[in-house]
Image (cartoon, rainbow, N blue to C red; front, side):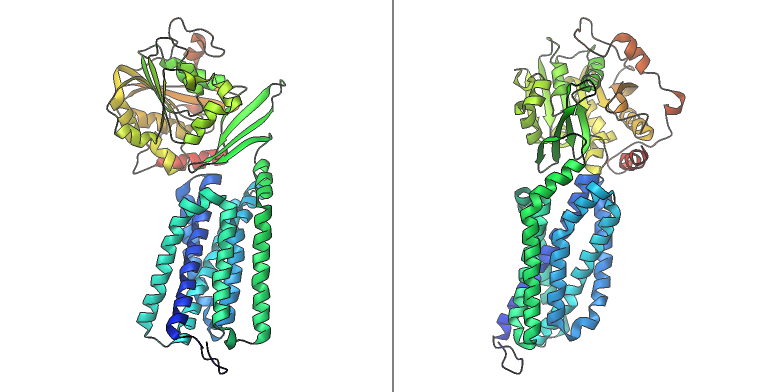
Length: 520
């Protein structure tokens, strides 16, 4: 420590170690805030590349502004740093909650994201000049060495924060509570250490005021933490028309199942993944009959389903007694578990997973296909809409090329392709991408009330396939031969568009989807 003149009364080495430990912790907290904003945007609105670009560019710009703004504060670095850390703990800790509220109730997510990212970035940027001043107060040091020490602690802290977010905080605490917890750590590390170490350099009243401020920050964060579960339930429910029956956040997505009543009075069970509707129990049979049965007139002893973790496409495939095996590849094990064990969905899919012909694989379809050394007679691609890069790769020329490789002679593929009415560019880009992989294509579309006009592409490496029904298939509620004949006809204003193919290097579907569904 220092004596009455303000000099430190602990060894300079120990004091510097404490300050560098605060740098390490604050850097870890700062990167967690950054990653939390990126991840939240990806969950809520998709398009992870756009979300990351907004957050990173705004925060880096704001860090520069914050560094400049901190220059006049270097005369009182202890007080200034404590105030900055208190403000950062509050802003960063509450950031996810505030953005969730802006999305759920105000429909102002992107403007709110820019404001929050700027505020957090500016406060992070103000840390470095103030910390440098504090280090130099402990012991004068060559500028190059001081910067090296400071940035070494900062970068290592960022590494720990970057690893802690996806592997510890997000799975254990979730978005909202994870950010609040980091805010508490930020407040304690940023304020308590500096106030204790430099307490003899500031007046008694200032120490008391800063101490009370830290307590207030911790009280706000702690109180919000206690109320976070109730807030999340209310905010999530605001996004859905019907009552939420089940909600799960997995490492891959947010799964929400709602349960309401249709206009006819029948129960309406709906599945949402990351906020996007996957099916309604009232009319899902229209979607799945249209997806599966036009594929089945050809060989279908061995069927591969990519996606479709709810088991509804699998149910339709297993109607055929001559199907010897049906392999379903789904990324999220939790979705598979729910499809097996959650009553409303298991009942809807007819307990298809219990059929001995069903083989279930929990894997990324893209990576799984790359290592596949077997062939299938029929392939069903039932993936979520390609609204970000991670799903757009499943609609790429390269992906369809891998599917073509695993098709047995005479085999066919069908792809759910979105809405030719609401998203015509996306629909025809998918069709064009399938054709670019060397497959003959036949697009068709039907009406699914929950989705509107919905389209599919039937494809084959050989002759142009014709959507029709297999002889002897019975029990269908929607699809018949006249419907399939009409389904291949598109109105003039929704026929082939001048669009680009979607590839891994140029994921054009992401932009098409963003533009079209934004205006839908």
